[in-house]
Amino acid sequence: MRVAVVEDQPLLQDVLAAGLTSRGLTVVGRARDATEALLFLERTEPDVVLLDIRLPPGHSDEGLCLAETVRARYPAVGLLVLSSYAELHFAQRLLGMQEDARAVGYVLKERVGDLGELIEAIRRVAAGEVVVDRHLINRLMSRQRTSDPLERLSPHERRILALVAEGRSNLGIAEQMDCRVSTVEKHLSSITAKLDLAPIGEATRRGVNVRVLATLAFLRTVDSSAAAAGGPR
Image (tube, rainbow, N blue to C red; front, side, top):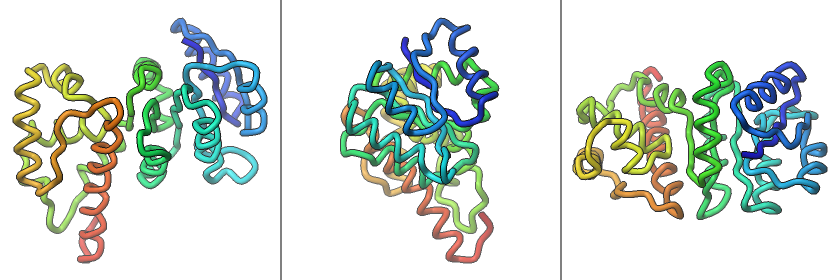
């Protein structure tokens, strides 16, 4: 697998490149900003670009802007964005870049400390999946709310909803939960009814981002409602 690394901190860039290479991936390009990245992308087209969300010169959303440019110019290239913070609006922006967004991921930089999880995310993105960091989802689901509709769900249902938000397919959820796909489908129907959501059944490759975005939007709306009511977040 061919991977490009866009990271402005030299030490972290070295760590990423060395770690990926040690696991058999080929690092075909390294850059510290968008300009450098676009230059080597003209010469080589990697399977996945791993990029920091905050790059020079402003260290705000340059990584996302670069991701949008790469997707427009090289639609076959997967995009895995790294962030130091659990910023839901950035994840939603990434997944909403286009109607049929695929091969995109948003993970926290702390994932670099677990190379196995980072490699799994890269491989999932390369395979065309949508990936959202499970720690971001866990933080969203565990927040205290004055009125929490998630309390209507059983522990199994909460876990399945979290896996949906991570971008897992029904088969992927079944493998994680060690159960049958039909069991996952029954739980999804129950979740839909209990939370009064639009159906969140199977995710096709074209539509996986739709149900991920819908689930993230629901979790964010719940938080917004709690904040408006004056409750803790």
